[in-house]
Length: 150
Image (tube, rainbow, N blue to C red):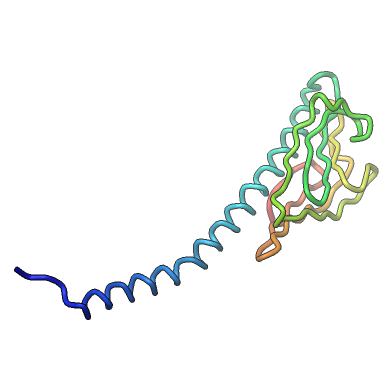
């Protein structure tokens, strides 16, 4: 009857430990990247939805996206403070993520609102999504309302 020696077992256990230790940081980085990608895609989708609903005159209203450090909200109305909150769609960020923005135009400095019928944005600029461990994603909104990741 053949069996493994103690040395062979220790070598296999040692290799397993080394591989596990090496894979943990890689897995963590993949999770951070996935969180950033998911939220970046969701912000872009919210901006595009707001523009499309404004152009379609959905509920005969303008639509926009409001940004706060820990969340973003798709809303119906000409500005966030005068919105119909029954139509709010909100995403709260994980505590390891934060939003910042640099927006210029004629509207509120922390939101992008699209004109009813035309879908023109009242603000243009960038929205930055930052993870506190590593990585950022920057989304730009141009004068035509096109939202895309830089």
